[in-house]
Length: 205
Image (cartoon, helix red, strand yellow):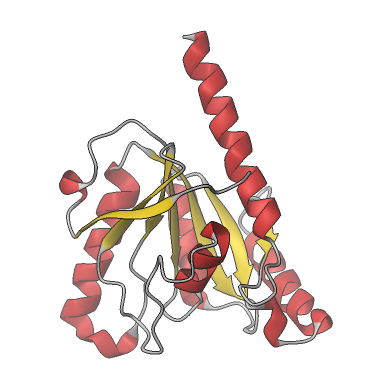
């Protein structure tokens, strides 16, 4: 897939105010500082599309970016940022849950996980929650350039083992790096394949 255009459209804290369209949305979420904005910018060839920050937990809203005038990338707030305080964390949790559970246009949720770390309880619990609610999601391991291949793959292997304790099969998994563009083609090809299948099924109705 070639990204010809990528534009910011709107930010919201309420799912009811998201764009009133029927086009597919691919949402991206992860713990704070997982490299979400950098990944979105890498996928779209647009360095300043999603605002990157050295301060974790800066994304506090649901951000819609229209891609090729055909589908959306949705940048969701990061979860589990401790320094936000209990009330702030609860607000963000509500924004995330409302979007994920209520937004019919959300076609797939990409859960970003930092490959530099061994399995984190918050990530496992979040993915278990998605499974319990029947949410279609995929996993993107980020920052593969930051450590040796063996360490990264070992951590990914540990995540797989952890998930398979409760899951019969794993969701699609992608390995990425915003620095060296790793995973870009695979992720975009996956989105394109879903878009094509949606188009086919819609035409068949």
